[in-house]
Length: 557
Image (cartoon, rainbow, N blue to C red; front, side, top):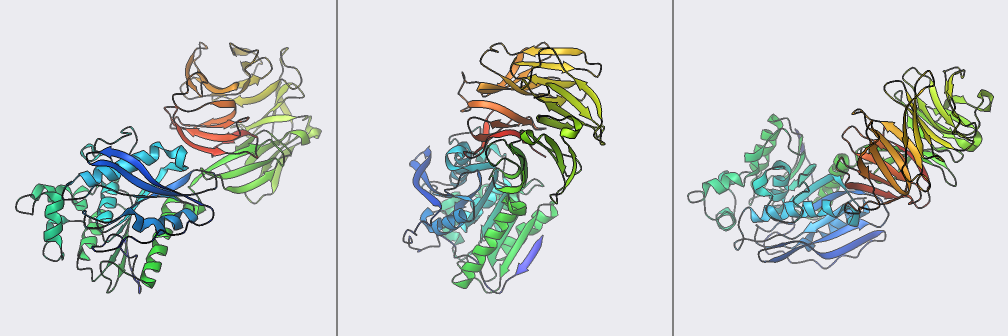
């Protein structure tokens, strides 16, 4: 747990009693603001939110902003300035309304906050959200609700009956400005606790003690809680400073990361330069948690086969290019265990390995008999397997560039074959695109398994990967699809079936793909000009539109 004293104080807490709704701020260039979006229909009417997001394409981390106001007043508009700034910083920011006390009591307010998170995850495609990166930020009552989001992930009784129950409401991090943490110990020093809490909880400590305990974040500490940044003034007479210390210490004991930014002399609503500094501190925390190393913490190598082609390392799912290696319109890229990357440069008749510093450290060329390499894979032995479509053969080379194995077949003609990939059993899966077949061959050159696409006249195979459970994943064109086939050749799973749009996924041409350990899949829609990520259920998680790229291969390190 990190404690930090700053000489200036934090953000003016939105929704402090008596605060007026600010004038609507100007929307910056490059930002889209969509307002009055209903996210849940509950007793009392629709509950709404406003969403600010970058105009540029890509899936962004989400920050849910929850205003304060003693659980009984306040406005989501008070967080619009921060929402717009966050959108400029590369986040999607949603400032939400929720039901008020005394008409509605705990846990109605929390039900709404969780419903908002679920709604935004369900509408990730609409708003350009990466649902795996979500933070809650709130002040005062909103800080309390943000803490509850961070500490009660998976607690069924707090989910409510709002829409999209299949979506998780858990968040990855929390920023709490002066959020109360223990309602059982706030009456003595909290200026208006005796007025606010009975309306929120249905009674005081004497008549509603269980509700005070259940609604206190400190009651829900566990090792899997989200990291928290606490922002608190030491002279806060509404939510005493000791409240944050109690929860921070409890979370630290449980092994949960916390930071306490304390502001000497700061009250419950800090202003001027103090507000600026707190904004900066919050944004820095959000970037550290949701954009580590300048991005989402996930990387994806892609091979752009189009004009100005390059093998590119992307921050995923933002699509920001972190590294680029010209590939002369090559089809394939593969990150290696040593940190290098292997690429094909089709028209230049080269397979090359590049170090992180950009230097080429190894290559195969026409001098090695290469004509037009489509795909290349580094084997466990250190050798390299190449599918050469113009030569109509698959070749294995050692580190010295010497040919040590090759396979061809009567069905292979120039420009027929596409990717050849090794299996854990030492065999090779070869895609004959023109014949729409997958051949599995052993080291003796024997075909040990063959699969034929049923409608081979119109749909072509591009790549096949053998998975740990024995099934073979195969990418198909027109319409694009990734099929999972058992040893008997039966299709047991499909992603992107053009006849079934219930999951909202349809491909023009599925070319490269990479299956993740958790069953999720990255897929390149070659003609649809996009890269998609689906989960193990086949549900769309993230999408990156690539109108200027023709991505033939994708690979997650």
